[in-house]
Length: 194
Image (tube, rainbow, N blue to C red; front, side):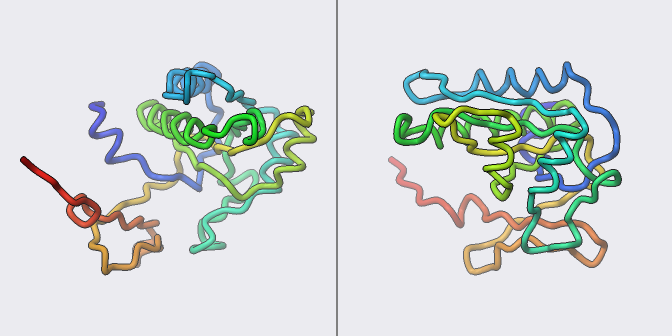
């Protein structure tokens, strides 16, 4: 698949097939994360790949999904839940002022790699951070920045181009497809050409 196809087809996935994600594919996602740009090449991010069912369920129980279309895109344990969570953690922000840029680059790289491998991801910011911290037995100097749900997609969200005056809220269309409006390049960009 060409990268432009990966970029255009990548959508957030919230419904997953109940199919095991191969460890080699998880390692591929983590390789994509480690090759991402990071501030001053400090490489302070660390990852926990969770596939053990009890741990997976505990993390799953503390997550919230797709606020604008709940409960219609809230996965159900054992039916549409992910097979893996990748927890992104690192030094507390006061010691790493640019870490959020690193997190964004790492997660997006994992999402693009997942798309290329036939997997889907959901970058979660709404989860029980304290519970995950305790579950993984992380030290007090560690902060959890994101949790990424990973699995084989059981849905095919779509995107549509919109202008600045249009509503950018994602929605479920009349055919039951999660639809994600995206502003056009022209709507977002001022060109200063010579």
